[in-house]
Picture (cartoon, rainbow, N blue to C red):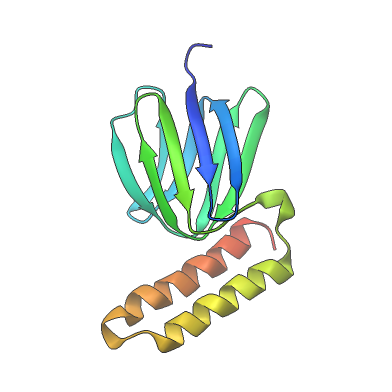
Length: 132
């Protein structure tokens, strides 16, 4: 099928996706980006957010808490710190993830505090984006 690329999403727990898609929306730390067939080779780190894969079967969305994405002209591989299909997210799970981020921020060294507090903010934004 013309215009497709391979999308793979894995977390330490499991492989969540291996699909032929037309585009992948990625929450990069430097800003959101969309990868499509022929994209310039790129590696980007992820911030907490929603990865959206658009294919013939519609849109599949996954909440990620961080990690990185490798983009090539023929595919996107996302290696997530943790990832959950959006339809499996609950408010309780998101609250637990936010509490964990807050705990880590409270223990952060002074030079890491800004990054840790940004993680808490991004996790709260993830909850909003997921509709919880």
